[in-house]
Each structure stands twice: as C-alpha cells, then as structure tokens.
Length: 188
Image 1 (cartoon, rainbow, N blue to C red):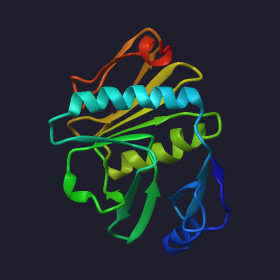
Image 2: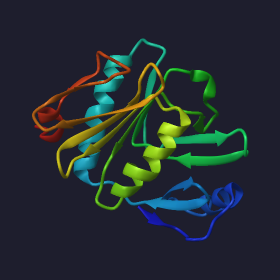
Image 3: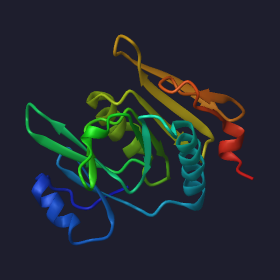
Image 4: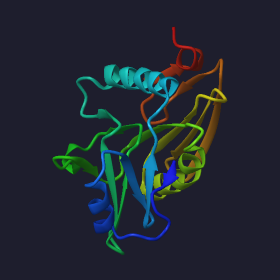
C-alpha cells in the first residue's frame, strides 16, 4: 500500500484524482492510498472465501462482494467521507447501495494481507472498521498462515481471536461460516 500523495486531500480532490486513473485508490483520513495488484496466493484465498460465503448466503438477505467494490463511510457529525475497497465484504442491508458503491458499514469485512499493505490493513483499516460499526473483521495473513478476528460482542465491545494454521475458524456473525485453515492456506 503506497501513498499517492502525502498532503491531505478533500474527498472531491480524491474523486478527481481517481477519475484520472485505473488504479485502485482508497481515501482515509484525508490521505489517498494506492493498492498494488494482489498476488496469486492472495487471489486464491479471496476466491476460496468468496465462494464459501456466496454458497452460505445464497437465498438469504445477505450478500457477499469482492474487490474492487467500493465502500463509503460517512461521519455525520463532520460530514467527512472515507472510501475503501475491502477484499471481501458482506452486507445484509440492501438499502445502502448506490449504483456504484455501498454507503455505510458492512456487517462483515475480510482483508487479505500482502507485504505492501500489512500495516494499512492491521492498523488504519482496523481502526476505521471497528469505529464505524463493522460487526466482524477478519485479517487473513497468507505469509504467516493465521487469521486475526475482531468482532463486536453483544455489549458492542471489541473482541479478538487469533486462529492458526491447522485450526478451524467460525464466524461470530454467521455461525454456519466455518473455515478449515489447512484448506484455506493450502489450496489443492
């Protein structure tokens, strides 16, 4: 993850900059970030998780989306906007879609780490997602073969679980969503 520019930008400047390129750009706290193309391993993991979520949610009110679908968070008190491109996200409220993006906090987000985006997903996006009301956030690390799970409990307190290779993970939000990390990190 690299900074496109180090100066603070307005959301309008971000949208103007974005209109000039085909690159994947995100806008968080006044800073424009550029995402590099994901690795093959990243894409294998994303495809696996997307397929599992798609099959699980088929016929329900919830839907799964993959990058490059935009998510816009708005701060109503300051009227500031943030735009990100999660690797995967699940929403159960269809009312928040515009033609090109989802506005509001998805219920569940999964980000898959790459060497270039590790701190961005583990710090910047973690803070954004948890402070914006995302109910569950998985950070999948294919380099170290573990998954960090952050979720809001019934008291809206942030909880954390670390799942290692060889263990199974079960979503706190979608209890039927169970992943064996051996299958995830070692696709056949």
